[in-house]
Image (cartoon, rainbow, N blue to C red):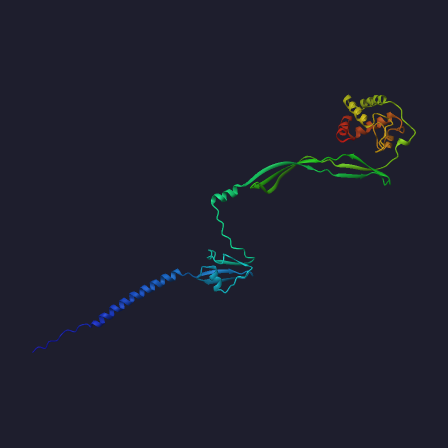
Length: 316
C-alpha cells in the first residue's frame, strides 16, 4: 500500500509578521517626513546685540521677537535705556538689536502719511530771490591839528554820508515763514564818505581888533569878478561865488562869527589863515577875496562845486 504524504504549507503566522513590518515602516517614514517639515520651519538665526556700554555680542536663536531674544540671553532693559527695534516688535532684516542710554518716550501711535500729504509737505517750501539796498554807515575820523594847544575847538571839515550797497539773497519759506536765508551777491553802489573833524587851536579873532576894513560889497564883488576871469572861471561860476559868499558873510569884510570864530568875506577859520595872502587880511577886501578864491580852487576846483557842496551840507 502506497503511503500518502501531504505537502508542507507556510505558516500563516509568518505571513502576518511581514505585513506588520511593512505597515510599521510606512508609519515611520511618515513620521520622519513630518519631523523634516517641522525642522525646516524652525530656523536658527545669528543676531547681534549692541549694549548701551558699547559692547556687542553675537547670539544664536530661533526666536523672532526682540523681548524673547533678550530674555534668552538674560539681558534686562533699564529705565533709562531704549531698544531698537522696539522690544515688542519682531527682529528686523539686519538682525541687530541696539540698546542705548536715554529717557524712554511714551508710546505713541506711528504716524502714517499718504503720498499726497508727503508731496504737499514738499511743495509748501518756496524759494525766492530777493534784492534789497542797505546803507553802509560812514565813519568819523578825528584829526588833532592843535599842536598840543590847551585851548581847542572842533571843526567839521567834511560831513559824513552813508554809502549804499545792494544785496541779493536766496530765501526759503515754508508755510509762509522764512526758514533759510543765503547771501548770493553784494554790490557797493555808493561808497560811504567819512566824517572828518579837526581839533584846532582856539584863536582870538579880529573881533577885538580896532582895525576895521573898508570897502562895500559891490566893490568886493567887482574885484572878485576880475579875479574869477583870471582863474579862467565862467560867469556862471561867478554867480555861484556871489551866492556862496552872500550866504557866508554878505560880502562884508568885517563879518565875524562869534560861535565859530570865522572871519571876513570868505569866513576863514581862523582869520589868521588869510595872512598867507597878505598881512592886511583884517582890513583889505582884496586880500580876503584872493585868499578865498585860492581856497576854493585848491579844495573844490570851481565856485560852482563849492556852492553845490555848501547847499547840500551847510558849509564849504
